Image (tube, rainbow, N blue to C red; front, top):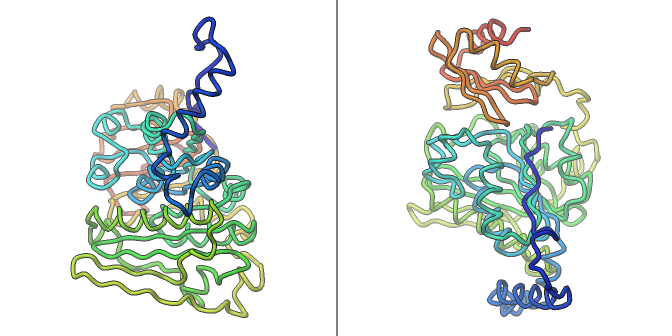
Length: 372
């Protein structure tokens, strides 16, 4: 999986001549107290809670609208290590609601996690931020999440959420679900061994697919901020050990007509393949061929073809420049095709065919320009 360089940290060579290490540590502690002073004044957190936050490893999967708000809260709260995972790059339509990105990110075709790491490291240079440019699959999900204290959902589809649900329950890691579309949002906390799981909530045979998405019915930014902030506060509770304060149930909001419901989570289903039978169906597909099958990205006039082999962007640029207009950075390559469509290539082998929702047409263009 492709990873951007590690965040820049202060090195020994940057230390001023004649500085005293003990004095520096004292200054650092003073700086930490100042940075988090208002958070530490909140009694349920305090100094001991802040230490626990600083020791936590948090994974945010999906750095779109929800993920950017969540990651912003986690960085400002002082999470010790923040791993952010996303497969996509910044587009102009993201700027209305994805708070860590700007027009420069669009211009430079920056992957979302790379752009987010640039912003977050300026917000808090004391924490470790690990950006991972990757499509989350059954093959890599466990490696992406292993060692985390909790996982926060910033994704936009239930297939990936069910995969995260399976991995979290297999590894015993709390999973904080969130979703928002139009003016509606919902969130719930799933804790292995204490609550039922996302599969139990959805019901037998329901994958949550086929519903409205932001790309089909739109979304207003405030519902994003509200749901992501509710996810973030539950993360803080879990990090500091305030388990008795953890919200129970599925919270559902509609902010245009001012409606709110808190529904009790269902009991653990006896035949649930995740939390009862521990079969973890999304992880039992071996190579998971579905990850490499062409799929239409709803409402985006885009087909994703998940390659099973890496792509050398430089070699591919040299080939495509003979017939296409090509833009390339270290993370992706974009080619404007003579036919009118666009190809976006990633080093891990994924290709987005933009400008069509016809899978046969997209596959034909892929075969013509990338090769079978």
